[in-house]
Length: 371
Image (cartoon, rainbow, N blue to C red; front, side, top):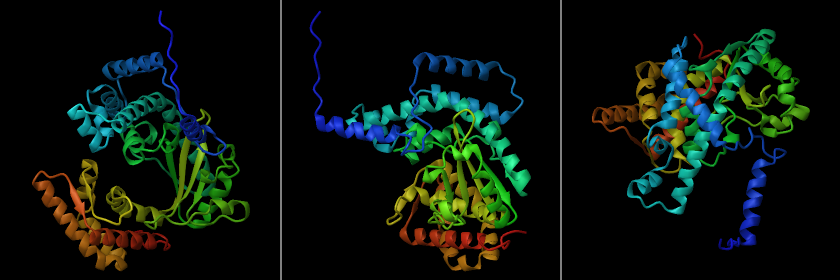
């Protein structure tokens, strides 16, 4: 047998890579779900169980069945991984000429797909626990629990979760995905919401993570004293909420949002603008949306009813709304020609941002957006 060959690795590279990895796994500095190693035998066993479930289990909940079918398709369909790669890597795969960057992105997406699959049942358990937790908070503090739509008590869609950590947040590791289990509690007024915030701050689910500044984000700025560090102001779009990350009994982290009914009405009407603008990066130059899901959302949600609501309830947005109407007309013309894309220019970016800020400004104004 020939002697084994030692491969020398430059000390500078070791130092750099070690620092990057340690920064990720050091939970004192980074709130994380943890890094999940993929056991091949465990993975294959769970995949086989899913196949059998989809083929023979009698689902009482059609949304659960649809979610499982979608997950199985993503895990088994040939070339499904391409949905989670950028265009450069897709082109490289098509030509058979993958450079190092494309190989790394492909390997990274394949690993994240397996990691998310192995974690998904635990996420469903955490979602159920988070739902019960939210009900307890709401029952004491006069809140209303809002369960997200979809399967398994509203757990984040498998495709959406994978898309987030491969496309929208490509730098994320699996441990950075902390909103797959999520729930919202809505209040009539800020006073009741702040009371709920105070109650949550004392629970074990929050105390385990409270040393992380990101464990709570108070965009209303209600924190005082030691809790002032969690105040962080509204988003660039103007949206506000109070968001907690909570460690559930099975170790998974869930996201609980608190908000007022009026701000939720603003979110319902303003979020579609976020869907458009989030593909634009720094928003300092024109960009093109090619995500078919976003194109369909805009076409569906930015109709006559939406424009009428904005004109009647958000008068400050009327001037900028004209540019947004032109953009939607152009989008629908594109769709009619089979072109599922939309280029947004600087003037339209400015108009969309202006309308968004005006909507959320009204969301912070008592009950002005409510019927």
